[in-house]
Image (cartoon, rainbow, N blue to C red; front, side, top):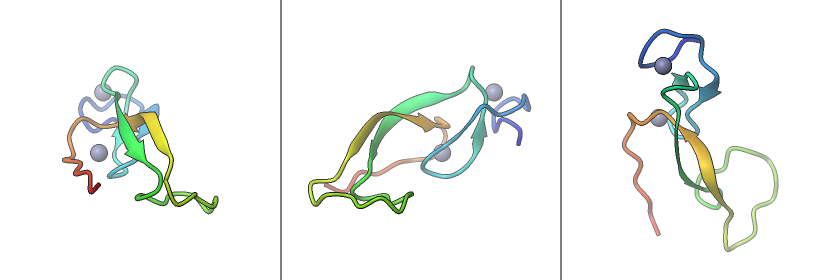
Length: 65
Ligand SMILES: [Zn+2]
Ligand SMILES: [Zn+2]
């Protein structure tokens, strides 16, 4: 997979939209595990927060709290 921004080999994938991102263009953003279920792991009612989730810096993430 290629980086969405520059065509380099992607090192990470945006957890929100699935775009590929290289190390240079990777940004981090809070991901609320309680709302976005990407794994089969049981999430407690309070939810989990990933503070350093990979983000492409492109998609618009809206938090519904
Ligand atoms: Zn890039
Ligand atoms: Zn994204």
